[in-house]
Image (tube, rainbow, N blue to C red; front, side):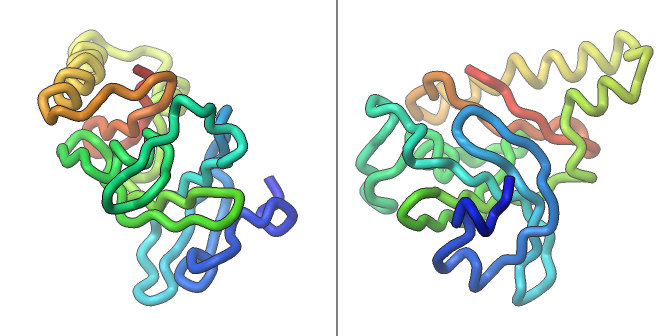
Length: 164
């Protein structure tokens, strides 16, 4: 994704962060690793295209204004296994959701690809964490995301996304 051509970085985000490299893409946008200008902290930024958010997935958030459900929920959920949203910016076309960079930035699928033999104790540990996330979200009283992703931290080595 050409960030300049898409104008995804326009606005206050560009004043505070420098994108470094693409990490992934999905139906609603794309993800880049970036660095914060003021202190050099590496972060992960999800650029969510406003034009791809379906009408049922918009909410009026009392603190953020009109945003996607994903942005509204992830800015409120606080759990040690869910990646923390540090701040959210927006411009005319995109939400720019800045999240902590966890571990090496390796996602679950990359980890599994690197480990041809995933032993039973580790597979069980990962599976328990995946199953626990929806429970934790419901326990916080937040509404479930419809066809959106929750950014889940596993162990200390990698991050993945759970579709609920």
